[in-house]
Length: 618
Image (tube, rainbow, N blue to C red; front, side):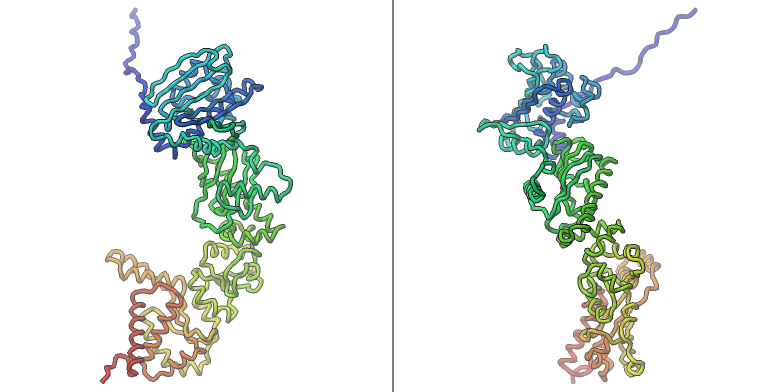
């Protein structure tokens, strides 16, 4: 019978990580936290969590949090749960360990009330402190003596018990001594301001002392949006003052944000002046009363750029630095709910307070257009209010569609400015869709107003609306038109003769988007290398040509048509073409610039020497 061979463990011995505290503090201050000011938040957060834990095991305990500051020192005292000597070793001196872990110390029932979730705790205070001293006494073990825990920024710490009189009651006091170069963050005025900024909505009374006068309250509850006011007007005044203090402007209006399902309460303030849709707003978010960030830029849908929000929530998840919101499914749902609330506010104004809606749209119609392009129902609601630039002046879509069953639009402001006077004179309904979102809204219009036809304006549509010239008159001008077509053929432009208003416009340059694309492609091909030249050549399209429409009603056109000199007529036609191009405000190609220079010099030559252009004076 053979004996069993004992198993030998050949794995290498395990070792513990070594942490360089100074390096870790440097990492926190330069990469995790945006500013040393967060140390005040950490002090307040630990105190509030300690008091919350105390109330979970002793509901009748007195709640007290006192923050103090003097030259080079900051302290905070709470009547919270406190620590024993063993807990001071295991919790305060172990980086990443939290007294709020699941199941520890019987605090699981209160866990959802805690502000801190990452166990970083006092470590953040080393961003401004060279030395941290903690005096604490446990409320869970009444017989335990007070404990002093002292740590330096070199990573060393000491723990010792103190006499009962050192701290007669349960709770904790934290003392910080400023590190060199961080004294400004310990100044009493700065500490008090940071405490108010972070902790004004915290659920417990917090006071501040600086040795001058009596203690001053830090908390200011309930939040202004939850307070009772004698009249709606008084509430609006209070909210306006609150907005001015927080954001620096008096709001145009305010929107209550009460979303119990999402655990959100707050207010959205409407900006009194237009702002760019590309501007990312900075919103203020409190998490269980503690300010998380005043720069949240992912809280609302992008279209709601016309409001600034301040709110308190207990459902959103903070990032590791607790300085912003983690963009998860919960935040996505809250973002959608807040967007819905802003949309409801607009609908309420449209239904019952048209004057307030008109005042709002005078400033922020762009934001509403951004929202309406994804919401046909809202577009229908806003039709009587949203302003558009049309060939008949500024009108709402409701007014314009009532007068025009067929609507044309231009994609550029320049094209509209050229066409608008002529379109108005000939009954052609044109809308300027060169502004942000307008083209998208016009694409939705047939769904909101069935029977309305919307199409992009093209050269053919305009030309067809202009009055034709009689066949006899056009035949009489055939030589002139032939000269004009010959001169402009090289520029990819046809010539048409029409009679239109206003009579002061001698010529109109018209093209389509497809024509512009083909012109841009040809221009790019001219300056491209051989490879791109071949590629761009293969993309050559069969776009319709641009068109110069000459106005037979204009006296100048008739005088040019009557010129006996063909060369001078050609120069005049090129001048008309150049002037029409300039009026359309389209970018000029090198060939267009050359034509303009040639025509200008030719006319100067003729004006100073009334002979045929190019003919030398004898």
